[in-house]
Length: 501
Ligand SMILES: [Zn+2]
Image 1 (tube, rainbow, N blue to C red):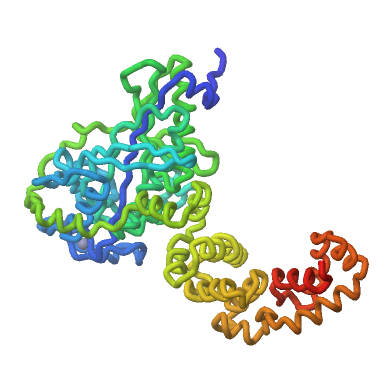
Image 2 (cartoon, helix red, strand yellow):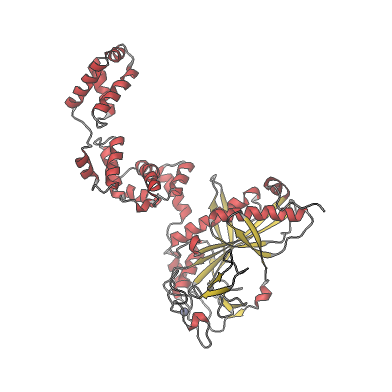
C-alpha cells in the first residue's frame, strides 16, 4: 500500500475544489455583570470567586436576564444590518461537560434575537466582499477546565483537572455567517478579513474587549470542499477556538489542503470538531460533531420571552457609531490617501492619534507622517504601543505648526520631538532649552554664506558660471556651520544673491 499524502498542494486544491466557509464568532460582552445573575463579569480573578447559586446552576436558583446584554445584542445585530426579532426567547441546550455546571447552556435556538444581516469586508487589495450573516444570538459562556500534569495542557495525559466557574454565565453573542462560497483561493484571506472587520466593528460599538488572546473574541472556522462544478456542499469540519487573525487564515488553508488529500484518495471527510496547532499550523481531530437533535433543545421555562419594542430598537439604532468601513472611506477621502497609505495608517494603529492631531490644527499629511513614520519607529524601539509614548497629539500639532511657520526645519522638528519624548517639556520649552530655532536673521546667515563661499572658491566660480546646482555644497556647509538651524531654502537664495549668478 502506498502512503497517501496528508495534504494537497494548495494550487492544486483550488484548481480542483471550491471551498465553502462558515464562520462562527463568539464575543463576550463587557457588561458589568453576568448574563443571568449579578456576579462580576471580569476576566481573571481567583478561581471560583465570581460565582453564585445561579451561575453554578444550584437547585432552586433562578436566572434574571441582564438588560444591558440584550441591549448589546441588539446593537450588534443592527450594526450587522440584521433584522431584530419582535419576539424571541431562550432555549436550553442540553449536554454534559464539566465546565457547564448546569448540564445545559442557556442559549437561543430557532428564535435568535438578530438574523439576516451582512458585513462588508475589505480584502488586502481593496476588493470588498459581502459576507452574509445568518444570525446573532445570545447565550452564556461556560467555565474553564485546567488540566494538570499533561504535557500540553490538554486533558490527554493529565493527572487531574481543575474547574474555574468565573467565566460561567458571562454574556456571549454568537455571530454565525451564511455559507461563504465562490471565494476560491482567497477563502483563507476572506476568513481572516471577516474576523478582523468584525473585531473592528465590535470595538467601535464598545460592547466587548474583543481580545482574542484573552478569549473575549473566539472564532470557529467551518470548512468544506466541493469538487469544481458541484452544487452540493461537502462534509464540513469545525476548527474550534482559533485565537488570532493569522491563525484563522492558516487554519482554513490547512483544512482545505487536508480535506482535499482525503477526498482524492477516496476517503470521506468526517464531520467533527478539530483543534488548531499554533506551532505547525495543522489541525487535529477533536470530537465527532453533535447534531442539533443531540442537544434536545427546548424553550427555557425560567425566563420570559423577549419582545424588544420597535421604539427601543430605533433608539438603540441611534446609538450606533460611525461604522469602521464608512470611517475608512471618509478618512481616505478627507485626507486624500491612496489605498496603500490608508492601509498603512490603519495597520499602524495611529488613526485616533492622527485624527486628534488634525483636530489640534495639524495638516492631515503632516500628522500622519509624524505618527506613522517617526513616532511609530520610536514606539517600536521602546517596544510600547504608540498611545504609550509620552507625547500628545497637541504637542505633535504644535511642532507641525512651528515647521509650518518656518520657525523649525524638519530636522530641527525631529530634535524637538525627541526632546518632548525625553521629558524635557512642551515643544516651545524644548526649542528654547536646546536652542533649536531656525536662524532666520539674514545677517547671521550671510556671514556663514560668505565664509563657506570663501572656503570653496572653485565652487563659487561654478555657481557664478551658471552651474546653480553646485550651490548644494555651499548650502551643506552653511547648514553644518549653523548646526542645521538655517532654513535651507533661504540659504540657497542668499548664495545665489551673493555670487550674483
Ligand atoms: Zn452568578
